[in-house]
Image (cartoon, helix red, strand yellow):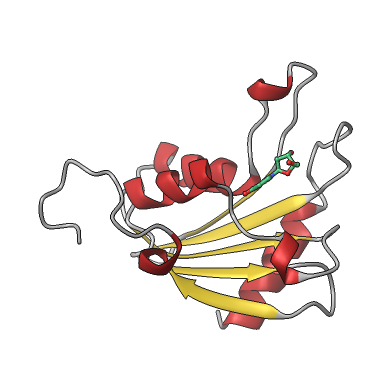
Length: 134
Ligand code: THU
């Protein structure tokens, strides 16, 4: 899938968001190194810190299916009118690091700019037990 297709899948996944508190819908899609694809959305909780981000849902769904290396993640916040309001939070960047995401595609709602970054750009000098990671 090219980046436009990945963003379309992430935007579609965002429609399953459970976000009655923020009303901010986030969808994500990950592509594992073997080509398998998983999606996720943010799932909120009345006890706010118990909420889950869309990227974390997608990554952990993949991990629960046995995935250990993810090549690409696309995230789309369909209620963000500008891509600058759609960047992954710090916790999600660290979760991406655990499963060695290389490339991160970021998009807002329909028609917004699409940006692409390496995880190295988004989370340089990150914590890891792997001495060969970066
Ligand atoms: N959210 C995500 O799903 N991903 C992020 O990287 C940042 C924020 C969600 C969490 C919450 O449900 C809503 O967006 C507002 O913070």
